[in-house]
Length: 248
Image (cartoon, rainbow, N blue to C red):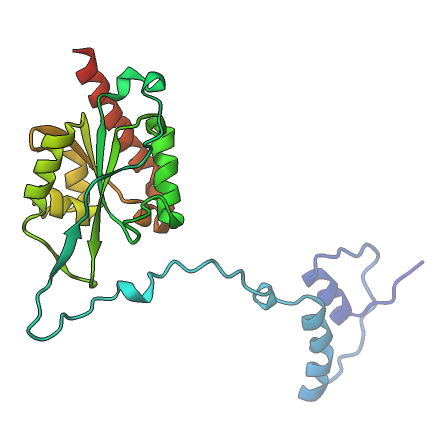
């Protein structure tokens, strides 16, 4: 079987990667080029048969934009910007059995973090992530794990100047082995430090004589999944400090 292909047809097959074996075609008389409308009619089927990759529907990634309430809101005229308040620490796992609590977890933990639901700190997506973090540390077995919620009544509000003193009184009362500070807002309010969170994570801290470790807050971890490994390293560091203190 022989294929009667002219030079134009062979060139089209070659562009599509199809090799045609056989003797070269006989020389054909040179004909004038076809009109522009004829060229469009010939090229259109090729463009339809092999559509460009850009014609495929794009894959839309989930948006990670902050909620509208995260935008700074100027304080009312004549009003106070001190609206970040500290709630009384509450036990997260009061039903924990002290007999099943590993001794390496120390005598107790105090967790300080900003919360949108102070009455239910383990509720919502951020609360569930916090619960998973604490369970991974076996702290759900400890009946003396307390959560001190920071709540702001207006976005961009400043912390109350009494928060460090109130936290110091809570540490003196609860006598935890470790204070876990979650997030930059909590670190600034609890420790009175203004450095970036990365520097606060690296340095040792003390709160009323109790060791403290700073790491990311659960709400930020939900927005930045790639920081979960760094947060877990901070939690392991806190555990190591408590275990070292218990071994003394």
